[in-house]
Length: 91
Figure (cartoon, one colour):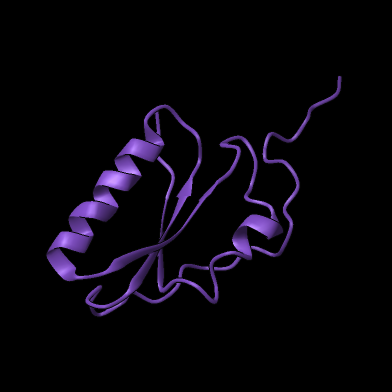
């Protein structure tokens, strides 16, 4: 019997979450859409609401396959361009 790992390969070592931001005021947001049904709509509306309430701006939007970790070329879009990333949506 062959048992396959459903996780898929990881492009880099896993790390913990970043420390929370004290405020989103004046910050740049990135969106990482995992292509789940309506994920793009939910993330875009969430970003618009946050921008209206806090003055943050939407800087980068990227998409990835929901079944696999985001590849380095997608993750590489964020570090120099955004302060926080909103990602994914579940079914």
